[in-house]
Image 1 (cartoon, rainbow, N blue to C red):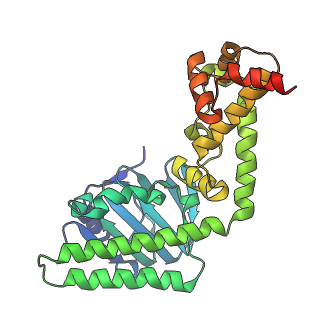
Image 2: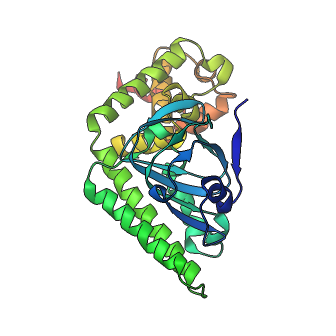
Image 3: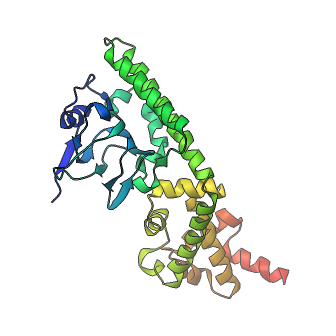
Length: 302
């Protein structure tokens, strides 16, 4: 069984590296000051932002293994496991790490909004890859500013200043992620085609009879993505949510079956609804009429 380092607070990670932490809830680490370091597979109870300038390492994240390359920014949230199991090897790294405990956000606006930074739930193969030196320099400059602040004598404003820097870094990361989606239009279009094919296969294989209606989580898993990343990708590509895309697909299949002569109850069963009234409710919400009314309208149009 893999030995997992439990990072319950920022000091646990600092102790592993032999680094003296200057604050109980925040640490900023320049890896060149602590290298060479041993690998660690960690279970995080803190937030973390990591990026390396040089080195290519295969990391475990969730159930997968990924290459951690130069220019990759990895964001982890409490409850996640990531890293590489300690095998006795020491590796020389240049880069930075920011770790902060959720408690430092208490009573701040960021405490409520941090859930909006969905990239914390992305997998490593979905992470930000900085493509410009300017992006790298921005994050490094923010790391230096936080380190300078942490080195000062603590006063009543220090935590607010640190949280401000953290939020600024997250907003820059969000900008990088948004740009990354926009610059991957061809790849995103391919994902959309695979999404539609997956929904078609779902019904052709009769999966709805055992799992019910297709879900965003199911589709994301089948496409080897986290649900958050998948949802963001579909939203950026189509302007609509993944869940609504699924609903529209289901409604179109329902329309086709109704026009072919199936009853509303038969259609509901064929599509994976628990009860016919659930189909009727969704149909009316999306189309403005019941399945029965829809059939009547179509017959009158003939």
